[in-house]
Length: 63
Image 1 (cartoon, helix red, strand yellow):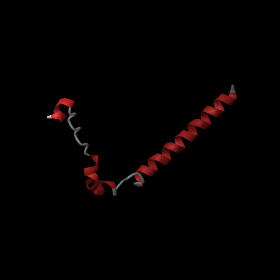
Image 2 (cartoon, helix red, strand yellow; image 1 turned 180 degrees about the vertical axis):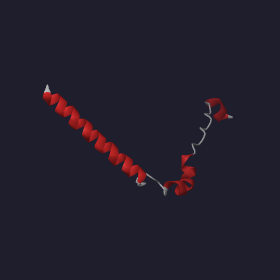
Image 3 (cartoon, one colour; image 1 turned 180 degrees about the horizontal axis):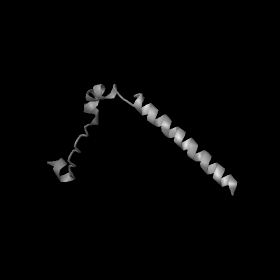
Image 4 (cartoon, one colour; image 1 turned 90 degrees about the vertical axis):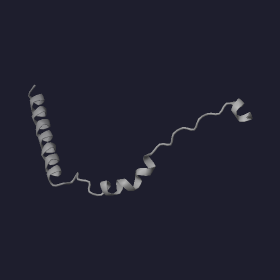
């Protein structure tokens, strides 16, 4: 039973370590993206989806 307490305490310490590392990375600006917003407008045309062309029936093609 004492092994479970040891493993739980170690896992909590590891989780706290990862949380501190994450907070530090966010505060230092590691996840800031300064490049993509300035280039996003250049690729705006690729995101537009063309409307589907109307389907012609056999009768319409013969006319």
